[in-house]
Image (tube, rainbow, N blue to C red):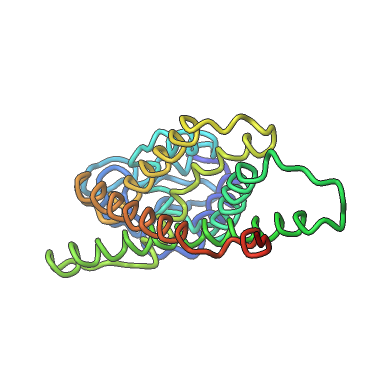
Length: 254
């Protein structure tokens, strides 16, 4: 049983959802809880597994976040199916800004200019915009690669159905691990390749778990999709490095 104050909070979190999923067995459900008189709620029991459809509606958001960081399937089902969490685009832009700043800092961290009229200062500003565009392009290549791979394998070869919008939302939300770049931005920590590599590995693991939850598929399929997306991202990054579009190079004539 839950108190009346919790009822309003849960209603706001799941508002607009017509269909839910059991976090334990992935079976569809029509409701997460039943509202009785005097503001008393009773959590719905799944008809398939005889467990609560969504135990997380009683949990504190911090507990849900910890379980999501641990890549628990139940936490991912709660977030992706049983909530109307629509911050994926804002989260995406925020993470891209952090990633762009890190790349820009690594590129120009050792260069300083105190002259406001120095053209190099404005060149550095444009370099930041270029880094943001490059990060956005790489993320787009990753998402497109994953969606194309799943469309071919699941949609064409296996005859299944895909929901591109739901998959895209899952991919963007599962990139939340990139917020770990924030401490590096704030405290200007030494950007060691090991630290950045671990963050990248965590993000890819979350991406794989999100795909697995959305499609209710095997771990092998989700890992293959992520690897193909990573390959697409790497190809785009390498292609962009070969383009002579550096503003500083264009403004420097020997």
